[in-house]
Each structure stands twice: as C-alpha cells, then as structure tokens.
Amino acid sequence: MVRRSTVGASHFLLLVLGCSACGGKTPSSPTSPTQPGAPSAPPNQNVARVTMDRADEVAGPQVKVMYVLPSDGPDRQLDQNRALATSVESWTRWVERASGGQRLRLDTYQGALDIAFYRLPRTDADVSSFGIAAIDEIQASISAAGYNSPSKIYAVYYGGNNMLHCGQSLRSGGQAIAGAFLEARPAAFAPCLQQTVPTNRTPGLTTSPDTPGYWEFVMAHEVFHMLGAVPSCAPHFSSGTHVNDSPTDLMGVFTRPGVAPDDPAVRWNPSVIDFNRDDYYRHGRACPDVAQSAFLTPAMASIAEPSTAVAAISPALTSPASADESVCVMAPSPTLVHAAIRQAPLSSKQGTH
Image 1: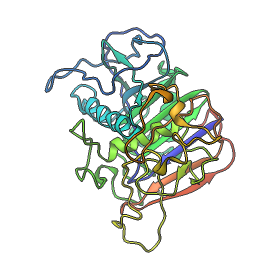
Image 2: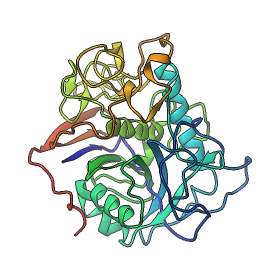
Image 3: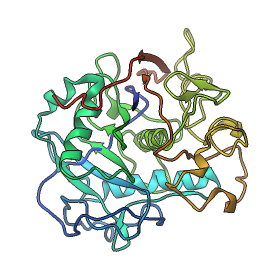
Image 4: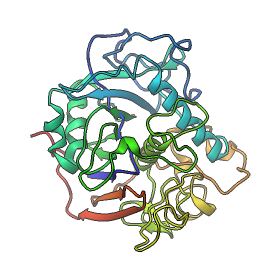
C-alpha cells in the first residue's frame, strides 16, 4: 500500500538531507521519547556534518530529521549552522503546546537532535521532473543509502525545486517520509520561499524556537499525515486526508471560490490540532486517534486537557493506509485548495526509474 499526501505552493514543505562526509554514530535501532528540539551546539557554533544514521540512544519509534540535496544543489549547510535544529525545535514545541503536553519522539545523539545529510545521485531538474512522484524518488534514494527503518518517519528538508507543490509525504513499503521542498517554484503559484502564515509574516525557515513559520507548519502537517491524520472516518474528512471545518486546523484544507485570499475564512492559519477535537485527536469515537501514536509521548491517558480546542496526532505508522493518492495545493494567495489525483494503488517502485 502507498499513502501519499502533497502540499502546494503555500501549504507544505519537504525536509531533505544531502550527503557528504561523515559524523560518527554507527547504524542501529530506533529511539524513544526525548525532549523536542534539543540543541545541536552552542549558539553561533557550527556542528560537524553527519552522513549516516548513527546508533539510536533509545529504542522505539521516532522522527529522523534529514537535510537532503540534489546532486547539483547549493549547500547552505542548514544541518551545520543550526537552521534546521531551530526549525525542528520550533514546530515540535508548537505540537507540545497545541496537544496539551504530548511530544514527538526525535532521533537524538548524545542528547542533541541527530540530523543526517545526504546528497542525491540525481540533479535538481531530474528530481523535479518526477512531479508528484518526486517524493518517491527521494524516498527510494535515501532508503538505498540506509535510511530505511520501519520505525522511523524521515522528516526531510529538501534543498531542491518542485514544480507542483511545497511539501509531500509518503508511506510505502513500511517506510514513511515527510518532506518540505525548500526551493520549490510551482508553475501555478508563487515560490514556496515567499509563503508565510498570519502568525509569522517572515518567509523562510524560522529563526525563533518559539515562533514557527510557514515551513515549520508544513513539516508538522506532513509528519501528522504519517502519524495517521486524517482518517476517513472523521466527520470533517476531506479528500486528500485533511479536514474542512476550520482554516485554523493544522490539517485544514479550504476552497472558497470568489473570496479574498486574506479572508480569515479561507487563509490557512494553523493554530490548533484538531479543531473542536472531533476528527483525529482525542475525539473519543471508534475511529483512529493520533494521540495514541507510538511516535508521541507521554501516553494519551497521562496528559492534561489542553486549555483550548487543540490536539495532537496519532495512529501508528503501521495503521491501514488508503491507496488513494491526493494532492492539496495552497494557492499563492494563499487560499488552500485540494484535489484527488489518483485512485488506483501506486507501485512501491514508483519514482525509482
């Protein structure tokens, strides 16, 4: 089964790592709960580049962060200059606040976020030419390089272009990848680098661990897809595994023809996890609940009720996934629209040719 979600020019982003020389931990098994966004090094101090999946500090499901580049992509050293560490810390802190206390389990090494770098064998133009299957190609490449644990979600910041969207996620062959295309320039929309959210009008990766921006919400959104959001049994389920009851929902998707793009009724303004808590997080119905995900800690029963209508994500990576392929596209406006683009099951080999 293959489950895919994509995000357009003003909605989601793809974390991709590039590969070069190496750092130091030998491959091993997954990690367990850690504090989100652990600093990689003192401020203003670069860290050594890591080009392998070093031994996990704790066993269990976890999110592995990567910086990926095409073969000809410029290296902005986002894995070394703390740009990615700050970005990850920002969106994981937001998830913890919005969920009322649950944290994502991150892959760490010696207490710090363990970011891997990988450079793809294909050029930027080659990867971009795959279109919606670009995420398949990236997953196939990093998997062949050893980043293929079924207990990890690979959060890839990809320093390359995409002609269709800003972010994608894919679950295929027991492996999951959530990606943000940092240099995406979709033909129909404004470049992804220009996109912002109402709570942070500065484009690009955030520089504040407490103020996530567009790219941080894109990554959180794509990771939540890989946790199981949004199940088709949700009352506000919308095609493309999103919800349609509020533009403030992390997983929200809206289409409002003829309405001004900055109208709060349509502009994606993520501020809660599961608006009214009735679709995918702590909803209390006979439907998958991401708050029970093994990628989140502490367990759902032990966390306090959030003070506002927010929630966190859950279904385990092994939960049943739809074979439908869908794309959600946020227009340059950024009004968010979506459309199902494929109904037939996809081959797990797609994107490897």
